[in-house]
Length: 141
Image: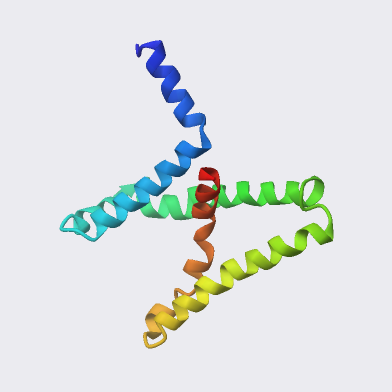
């Protein structure tokens, strides 16, 4: 059995939004370093290990990310119905920011990859992946 002080410290870490944000940013940095090092092939192999008939990456992309976006959608719905975004005037700036937050990364991706037809099929990826990082950065503020 773990000492009570250690258990309480762990609970405080898990309950802190800043801890979650730091963990997200730290894991991202670690993953980028490992994926672009000599360990890259092993790292790639790890994410494709079969778990229950599908690769681990597939479970995360199609399972956990679906749950994440469901929770984000429910939070947005709550704010639109009863929260800070319940009037049209208060929605205007966040809607414009959200649209720009999707369009600008997609346009940058298209500009960088304009000569590669195969890569251009992935234009939507940068448009959809920034929300987790945006929430992480906001938690640090």
